[in-house]
Image 1: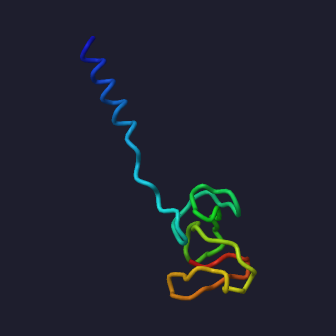
Image 2 (image 1 turned 90 degrees about the vertical axis):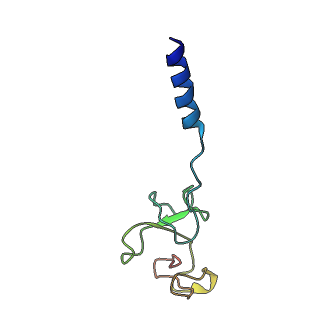
Length: 88
């Protein structure tokens, strides 16, 4: 019986270890599409508004077509699509 307790404590200890933090930055992959409240993204915005990326990404809202409030994306420019999301 004592061996079972030791094994269980070992399993509990391994479960208590924290997983490394996920990337929540601009352009990171996310899964829960939301304009304001996803905990997956620092901005709270996870969007699937970029068909060419092929999966939802962390972004931020912007005035449609006006990239002046956007972070610099992967292509080195600040772009806002016509749906009002900054392009990573």
